[in-house]
Length: 241
Image 1 (cartoon, one colour):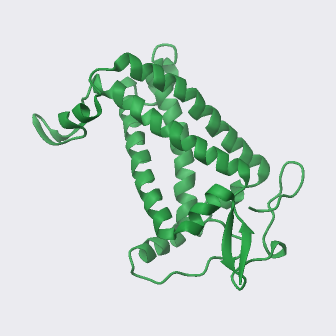
Image 2 (cartoon, rainbow, N blue to C red; image 1 turned 90 degrees about the vertical axis):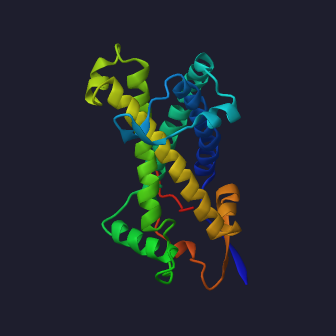
């Protein structure tokens, strides 16, 4: 017998699905800006081992020197990205959802176990009652939130290096802030690849939870609402999703 179990509240789903296209468009517009000064590579001296974007990449996407267009899009989308992130963090704090996301002392050890399971080196363990995310997910999602803050700060530092000279200096100067901004973008892309792979691996039930807010589970595996911990909110206890 199957049973519907709530998992993700509506607000979390909205923040998730709004952030996805905004971040994708920010990466696209960032590439338009980066093309104007494509300097990063792996190598030494005049020897290049890897250039991040070969000429064929820019030719295929028609990215030829669209600096003004890229900057216009990037700075408009920056406000949507920042607003969505602030609202998301505020909601998690007020609703108590942060208790599911924030890593604990056990998260690092559990993340290692999850990695071994994903590599096929150990069987999966049953999730603890009332938990939404395992240790690996807690570490990954918390890291992405911190990356978002880092992208906003480094972006402001290279956007207004004179007006925000203190911030730019704190980040190591203009060149270091630009490198950090670029590295964070690569981190988003890697996270996205792993995230999509894990969603595909988890199956339709996991994807449906982020679309509709519920999972379909066997009655024997379902956890009753009374057995699930309810994190306190600013006004009243909330029911975990």
